[in-house]
Image (cartoon, rainbow over all chains, first blue to last red; front, side, top):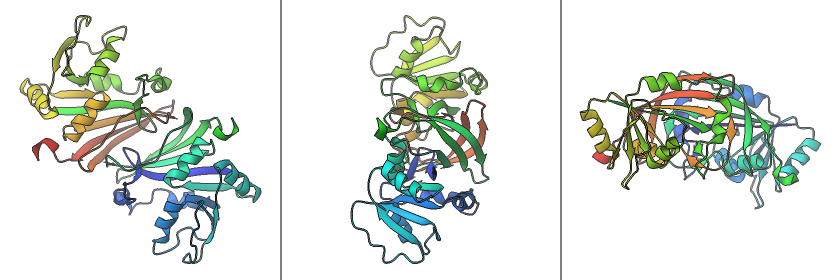
Amino acid sequence: MMTSVFVGTSVDGFIARRNGTYDFLSVGENEPHGYDEFIASVDALVIGRKTFETVLAFPEWPYGERQVVVLSSQPLDFSTVRGGRIEQMSGAPSEICSRLSARAFKHIYVDGGITVQGFLRAGLIQRITITRVPVLIGDGIPLFGLLPHDVQLRHIATKTYADGMVKTEYEVISQLRADSR
Amino acid sequence: MMTSVFVGTSVDGFIARRNGTYDFLSVGENEPHGYDEFIASVDALVIGRKTFETVLAFPEWPYGERQVVVLSSQPLDFSTVRGGRIEQMSGAPSEICSRLSARAFKHIYVDGGITVQGFLRAGLIQRITITRVPVLIGDGIPLFGLLPHDVQLRHIATKTYADGMVKTEYEVISQLRADSR
């Protein structure tokens, strides 16, 4: 099972403003940046509560028939989700991965700031694709957070777009698993 | 007069660790990443006290005959600088730029975390070249800091290197000057 992050950030590394809005990411909405190809390779998603609430406000459920796991230790209301396959889990990233692996999922898309940071800290992300939007916003919700040690990456590919976006894909090549120490 | 930033960071945006060391930047030391071409176009540097102290510990003064301005409101000891042209200034970024412009400098290299952030906040940076080293370090001295508002960038060029570095050059295209409001 592979786990991937696929995310847009400002050049200063933010995935959203402090209030959760992400208007600054949409400069290049009219040009495809590889999301369709990426999501086509995914069979399950792991997202946090805040990402779930953001997605719930979209006009359409964006994940089709893919299994969506929302991480939360608080009760969640899925009654307004129409057409999606969704369930709630809670627990350490390693536990979530074990459960999904046991169900034969092959490629997990991990999304949302806190969720991505938790999985990275636990050594449970294999691929990171960052699309940098040509703007500095100064403050917001950062993609990355504290780590127990350096995480070495291998550069796989970088693609530039006419709208100024720069998409870089990395493989995580070395990382202690914090929860196996 | 043009002012440029040319800097290496981790993928999570740090220019140094909390203790000031930057061992993680040197993965690609054996491959040139355009620094020589960049510095050849520079006729003066503006650096902070910490960058000055770091550079002073180098085996050789790295800036040749270029004018180096160290920003500090505290007394500095230049007696051990051999071969360099160095002076101290203090004041707002706009004041520093006015003084350098009056002396007919054409291309200023602004370096050091606090110095770069101050000039960016003041709207006084025109070019930013970031070379991202394929590593996450989790914590450290960030390249970017708080801004009075979004800063729009224009992507100029991105170059990838065999050692996994990704160098991206941006032009700053819109920025209120904080000190002219």
